[in-house]
Structures are given as structure tokens and as C-alpha cells.
Image (cartoon, rainbow, N blue to C red; front, side, top):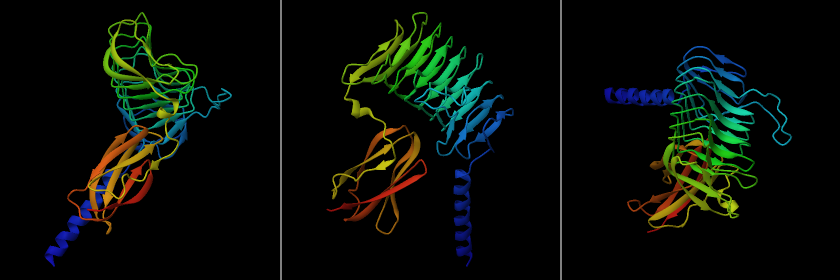
Length: 339
């Protein structure tokens, strides 16, 4: 009896720990709110924008890439609201895992602000994704930018910032990362940029008044017409250019889990899946009795097409299941291992 009670206590504790780890922490925000106290804030639901961060040390996030938008009509270029979706007015704030869309400016960082972090966010159908004027020590990492009309990220008189591991795709009129007017000593590294398939300019553009900017391992992708490139004006930003067909770099329109191949397999198979937006992704393998065999993926990933290999050399012949959990969506398919 004592052993059983101990087991129950451990089981309940594990359940509580898991519940706490996935609970949203902090204060929910609403449309048009102004945050005036430091702390954690989150989106409960999709909201219209005009969120103002007017306090230091604010952490704003969502669990499932919920959207903040100002609701303008893109095709007619008519705005219901000209204000940015998010305005950052104070230092040392973080914006994480939020989709920012349909806004004239997605995130505006006001002059003099230091230490903003924007990570794992998705910027779509804005005129400008992120705009920075006279700011420093900003970090923009692991974000997706798609179909932003003018710029993905615009830096004006802004130095000592970092743009790392972002993915930029434009199907409209603009540039990717633009630095102008003495924006100096910024790092641009490990980004994938497509500067546009229609009327486009550059994946990376650095004005001739900007000096000391640097970076490495950037990939600039253009279409089969040869529309690709950068203009870095003597700054030490390393990149490689690649031309591909238009449809090879199209962002998926929905979450998709493909059938593994080969199937049946022995002992290795490939699982492909597509993400229309950045999301936390978990891919798990189960046996015929529903027991978890292995977790293949457990991380935040950018939008696009992905694949993962599964090796089953230590498993017996039989039917198995693989499950994709991403962005609040769950998909399950079966596969057959034959030895």
C-alpha cells in the first residue's frame, strides 16, 4: 500500500509539473493597451494592434504564434489604422513567438531604445516588418518575414544591432534588410533572404554612409530570372547568391504532414512536413499500443518545408505511428517497418 501511495504521489507531481510548464505566465493583453509595468505579458487571442510597451524589462509572448494586426486592406493599400502593431518605447524588452501582420509597421522601436530582443516571430503582409531609428543592441533572431511590401527590417542611424538566423521572402516590392544613414557595426549572419519575385531590389542593402557592418553565412536566393543579390557598399557582410525556380521557395499555405518514404521501410525512412508560419514543433513516434518510442523533433522552427530521418534498426517489424504537433495542430500517420 505504501509503495502504491508513493507511486500516486510521484504521478500527480509529474502531472502538475507538466501542467505548470505549459501554463501561460503573466498578464493577458488586449487591443490598444499600454504596458506600463515590467513583467510577463501574453496574448490569449488574436487581437488588433496598437500595443505600446512603455516600461523596461517587459516580456511579451504567445504560446501559439497568435496574431497582432492593425487590419489594413493590403490590396487597396487602405489602412483602418496607421499606427504600428507594436511600439517599443523603453529598454530591455523582449517580443517572442508572435505573428505580426497587416500593419503599416509591424514593430516600431523608438529612438534611443536599447536592448530590444525580437525572436521566433512571424511578420507577414506588413508594409515594413520592423523599423528602428537610432537604436542599439537590438537582437532580431529566428524570425520569418514574408510578403512585406517595402522592407523586412529597416535600420536608420542604428548601430551595434544583430540580425541572426532569419528567413526573408518577399513577393511584393521591397528589400530584405536595409541599413541607412550611418547605421554602423551591425552584425548580419546566417540569414536566408529572397529579395522578391516581382518588382524587387536587394536581399541586403547597406547605404554608402554605413561602415563597419559585418556578418557571415548569409544565403540570398533569387528566382530563375536572375533577380537576386545584395548591395553592401564595402561592408564585410559575407553572402552567397543562388538562383532557383519560383515554386521551390514558396512558403506553404497550411500545416502538412506527408506520408513517410520509403514505406514500408527498413531500417530508415524520411518524414517530411510543412509549416506556414514559425511554430514550436514536436514529432513523436508511437508503437501500435500507443507507447511513445522516440521524439524526433522538439524545438521552435521557421516556416517552410522540413524533413527528418527516422532509424528503426533496434525495433521489431510492425506498424508504427508518427505524429506532428505544431501551431496547435496535430496530425498522425502510420508507417510499416518490415525486416
